[in-house]
Structure formats: C-alpha cells, structure tokens
Length: 578
Image (cartoon, rainbow, N blue to C red; front, top):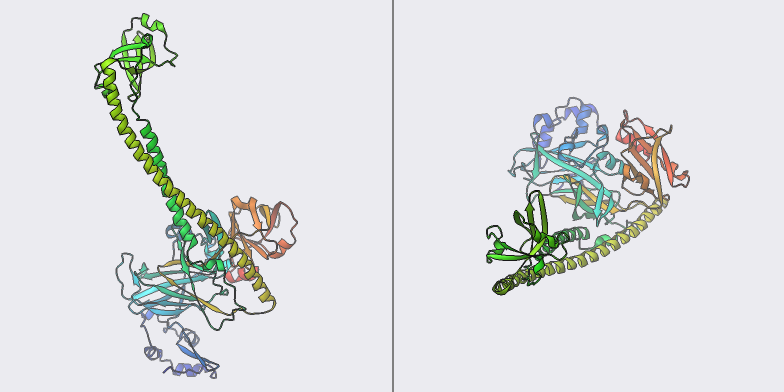
C-alpha cells in the first residue's frame, strides 16, 4: 500500500523542523536508500533553510482522484564544472565561450544498485544495476559519479559548440532538435563506460511532441552523427487534432540515410576493384607476344650475336638478324660504309623491339630495330609464338571476364543507389512539405492560444557521450546575399561564423566565413543572428533589423555588440527573446 502524504498542509515553522531533524532515520526507512559518503550526503548542513531544500523524498500526488508518482532524487544533484577536455577527447566540439558553457549536474549511485534521478528540467535518468565498467571492461563496485546536462534551444546549441549538421547524399542538413544530452560517468575521477548490454533510459519532456524526430549519437572523433532509430513517445490523452503532425516521410521502415551510406561505400569499393581490373588488363596487353617477322629488306638489316643471359627471350637463337623500323628517320644507307668500333643492343619493348646503337670514337648512331627470322628459325619462332599467344589470350580472357563481373556489380549498385537517391529526394521534399504544414499549424495554435499536449520522449543510451533527438532540415530559402558584418560604428568584424536562428525552428543555421557570400534567410520568418567576436563579445542582429532591410544583393549587417563579462546564459536568452 502506498503511503499518502499531505502536500497541502499548512506551512511548518523552523522550531518544528528542528525538533524533527532525524534525517538518518528518515532515509533508512526510505525504499531503495543508498548510503552515501559523509561528504556527499548533504545532511552536514547547519542552516535549517538549506536542510529544507536538500531533503527530498518520493511523494504521492493526488489530483482529481488519480494517483501519480512523482520521482525525486534521493541525492540532490551537484552542479560541477565541465570536466570534459574537448580539445583532446572531442575535437569536433568547440564551445565559443568557456564562461558560458552549459554546466553539468552530478548524480551519485552505487553501481551494484543503480538508481533513478529527476533532472531539473523534469527529465528522468534510469540507471540499471551493474551498468558501469572501467575502460578495460572490468566490472566495478561502489559509487559512480554521473555527469549529465541537457540542451533544449538554439542558444544552448550555440554555446555547447556541438556540431549540429548532418550529411546525406552529399547534401548538408541542419538538425532541428527536440532535445540533446551529454552524459558521462566517473569513479574516483577516472572515466567509466557502460557495460555490454546495459542501457540508460532517458525520458525528456520536449516542447515538440512530433514523431518526426529520430535519435542520433555523435562520433566525437569524426564529428559525424550516427542514426540510432526512432525515439519513443509517451503521452497522456493526447488530442491528435491539436498535436503536432507526424512527418510521413520519416515513417519509412528502412533507414534511407544508413542504406545510402552503405551503398555508397560499397560503390566506392567496387569502383576501386574495377579500376584495378582495368589496369591489370592494360598491363597484360603490354605483354602480348610479338608475331615473328619475315622480311627480305636486306638494305635495313644487321646480323648480331646475342648474349642469352642479357636477352633471355632470344636465347633459343644463337644468331639473329635485326631490321631497322621503316619509320626510323635516323637510318640511312651510308651506315654500312662506316667501319664501326662497337655495337650495343638494349630493350625498347620487351620481346618486341630494341635499340641498336653503333659507336665510333665520339660518334654514335641509334636505331629502333626488331628481330626477323628466316628458314628453320622462323618456323621455330612461330611455334614458340603460338604457345605464348595461347597462354596470353587465356589470361586476357580471364582478366576481361573478371572486369565484366565487377562492372555488372557496379552497375547494379549504381541502380540501387539511384533508386535510394530518388527516394531520399522525395523523402526530403515530403519532409519539407510536412514541416511547412507543421510550422504553419504551430503558428496558428499560438495565435488561437491552443496548447499542444505534453509528450514525454524516451530513448536508451547504449554508450556514454552525446545524444540528440533530431529531424534534419534544409537551410532557409528566400533571400540570398553577399553578406559582411560590422559593428554599429561601421567597423568591420572579423567573424569565423554567424548563427542564424528562425523563431519557429529549434535549430541553428551556421554560415562560416567562406559562406558569407552565399548567406540565405527566409524573410517571412522572425530571424536572429548570433555571433562571437574575437574579444569573446556577442554580436547580434534582432528580427526587427530584417524587416527594415532594403532589397539588395550585397549587404553589410550592422550588429549590436554585447559585453558578456557580467552576462549569464539566462541573460542572453532574455536579451534575444528566444
């Protein structure tokens, strides 16, 4: 039987709290109580007000005769500084201003027991028992420190420095997020990992309950997001007529992104194999044996004794006649009138042609020659040629057959890829169409003050790191500019990138310096630009600026500069009204 707690009782005074401050006994009676080390219990606080804040228990909330359990962490989270060394461990993550980096909250649990925690956002984090191992895969005992943080809006995404782009079929998309998390574990200051088969369940409460969002995990070494499937939607009495529409193109059972990547990779492998096969055919064709030549052109011939060690392909013949190629312009009949002192033979094309060089003093003459045969030598050369040519053709047929099979595989893969590409383009078109309808509905709902039912989004973390509930969207369309950026005094700002935010999209469209000449935005949306200067100040453009812009192909944005020395993340969001 569940215990009932009256949460509407009259406030109690400090004396009554002090008279009943036996918290050790209270926690020992609490189900699933985990005894924490003295320095982390929170009970060693001397002020009554602090005790009243830190002591939390599981309560039962009564509303309209329906009982709902509200889970509260028995161990309050502790805000900790960012313990992740991004430059070393996660080279793709670059928080623009360390001072404004979103902090982690720390939770503690015994590994043998696990635990469930309620984050300040309302999200729950469920840890199974024996979930953690060390980096070598060894099981762990004792207390685990869990560091966790969430990102929910464009300012969070910008300040996190986490990449929010996704490449599909060579086209870059921006992630619109329904919530992103980072989660890491430590024991005695050393990183831990999730054990094989163990999962941490996260239940978030996003503003957008649409089913169009997928789950992705960040590969921090490459900066790429890996598709992990769909998230689970948990709801209570959702009125489908006012809920966000599902994007039908996202309901495809096959993961087009993943399939296209696999097909593309297979095509690249096959292309390499095909290139190698073609190269081998060309190389083999160069070894085609030369058919013995019979010639009576005596005025262009030389009789030579050939060293079989130097020219093994000619070893069957003790004496050979070489004829000068008819196209060799270096040859003339007067060569026979000179008494040459020396002669040399070198290979031009193996087994087919040679260079014949004649020497006398400092003078020399070189001709392109080929062997010719007569009588018995000719018959012998023909027999040898036929044998070599048969072997050559057999090998050539083998290589051509292999190339043909690889080419057939390549053509089949290309057809599959073209089909996938067509499906992907259609999916993207459908997605953009449905997104447009969705955003139009959101605007109408806002105008009519119609609330969208709250939906919990759940997913399982299979390894510690960065996870995102996302839907890829294309960059804005409408107006294209060659943009530059200056402060209010007209002094140019050297910005590495600028971040464009549309009010009704939970996304950040990033334009780096090389893209300023192709800056695009939708004039029908409420647009905001956020950037960071070299002095780590924030430079902004508010929506009203876009409404008053003149229509021109080239534009210099005059940005408002905000000194962030005394600013907090909350201040920035209030300033930008986001």
